[in-house]
Image 1 (cartoon, rainbow, N blue to C red):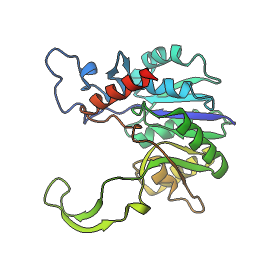
Image 2: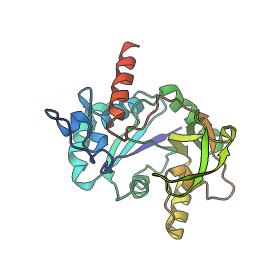
Image 3: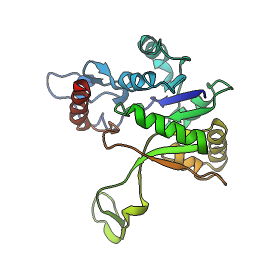
Image 4: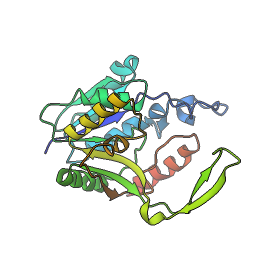
Length: 250
């Protein structure tokens, strides 16, 4: 089985950039830079994420999609981290959205790729066992994602989300999951999903939302972990540092 991992990392990190860094700290170390490049214990978050997939024995190739101006220095940064890969590291130009970045990365896959996993570049705490399980499930079924069951009560509302919303119903958690990544598919399934989205001008929030629109494709869910956080806001860095410290104790 030949598995390629796509890491979309071309985002500008607007939620990180809303605030100014604390006095005496750089934007990267304080978590106010582009989130994929901000420093976590001395290394960019993207590097930590890449290290997890390099350590997984099921991964063959890694394709990182970044802004065109970043290609050369990101490749130089990641090349030492990926020398033990079975396959190759590729750094390609992303797009103005996650969807465009992943579609561009798909074009860089080798023709004999059996499975493609798309993972958020800012989820550096994915567990190796979770990677193995979701890849095995996708190898069997063709499509699988990682997800967790929500612990909070979920309400359906109407009106403004930021304030003034009115509760309309309570949604049973038994039929809900919070989607995480990796999301793993056979390449032909993902390509069909992107072609359909382009035809319909559909924009999804993740790869699963695109694949769900295909006929006769069911997506399996593999249970993930609450530790598999997506570092999005400055406050997430405190939790990330805690998780990093705990991993170092193992």
